Amino acid sequence: MAGTPREILSPASCILRLLATNNSGSRSGAAYLKRSPELDATIFLYAPLQSSARKLQVLPPARAVWPPPFLLTIKRRTSILNGFAGLNFSLRFSAGEDLLPETTKVRLCFHDRCFDGAASSALFSRFYRERINAQAVFCYTGMTHRAVQPFEDGLFDGDENVIVDFKYSSSPRVTWWFDHHQSAFLTPADADHFRADGSGHKFYDPSYKSCTKLLADITSSKFGFNIQPLAELIHWGDVIDGAQFPTPESAVALTEPATQVALVIEAAPESGLVPRLIPELAERPLGEVVKLPIIARHLGPLLERHKRSIAVLRERAKALDGVIFFDVSDLDLEGYNKFIPYLLFPQCQYSVGVSASPTRAKISIGSNPWNPGAAEKNLASLAERFGGGGHPRVAAISLDPSDLARAREVAREIAAQLRS
Ligand SMILES: [Mn+2]
Image (cartoon, rainbow, N blue to C red; front, side, top):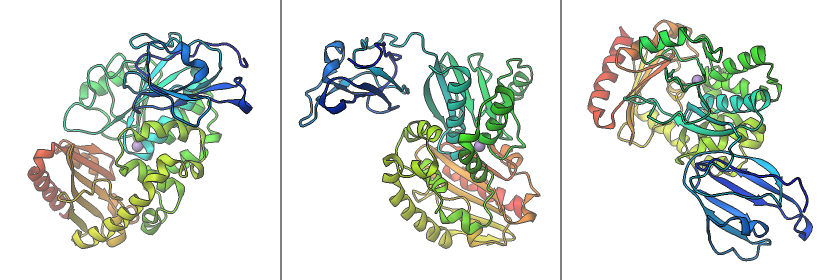
């Protein structure tokens, strides 16, 4: 048996795909624990390990593969574990048992369906492994801005609980926080709590265009993290979240790998996609990430949909006194590219849109990044008056899906205020 005997264990609440490779027909080789968060809790276990897998459900092996894989099912949860081990490690899988007792479990909550949120998570994960604890196991949870309290009870179940590119939580279980949203604090008490924090692990700077860049600057300057391998990711996090494209055409063209990955992150109809993508973003160049099946299988249909959405907005959007207004809440169009309105109406300053999904009715407010006159009004402050938030130049309000009529009303009122 090759490799150092080693126990490969994981928290009981995690999902792994375990692939034992077979070197040139012999039974020696390495077992590769493949990251597989939020999948169907299926483990592929090769024959040499079969005897160790007592407590798991073992399904019949597939044909024509040697050694034959066995499907093992454990509890459905989110986690990530990767590493190499010799084939003769002992597995102690069993539901309810902590399988990797010495490992630090990091619960990382990030702004879901957002390139900056995903890039921030990738950067933090790599930073944490390289500078804090190489053995950490990451569990990723995507956070969505909702009408109600976003942090559910029991969410912060890690040894470390991290929030990136998302609102502050005063929970004593949160150990790291990075954000750049103007509306980062749900309450004044949360803001006070942050100001009183002495951990040295919580950072807020709304002057940053992206949380990725904020993380890059802080982890490199304060914690000695080498950000060079992630320079491309950091660059694009800042361009995409900060709307720093040279022209509306370049923002809408979606020809760069980064903008294609962003499209899939924002709009792919696959739950749990971003948690699976984050480890790839931490290790691979974007030109490689875009070719991964997890991205490639969504890209064609989404680019088509993107083209259609330009046509829809061309038809629906109306510009009046420098403000573009559109209501696409009757269509399945949440996740449209937010720069399309300015491609259609380059002279306009602001845009207000209403869209709907099963989880929310959403009012999106934006300012034209290519119109210097559009920086005048603070859109986050405007959105906050209606229970929303965001950045000075792009903001949103999320209402309950049943409040669509109210969302339309609020959108019209905001458009009227922007015109005045
Ligand atoms: Mn962000």
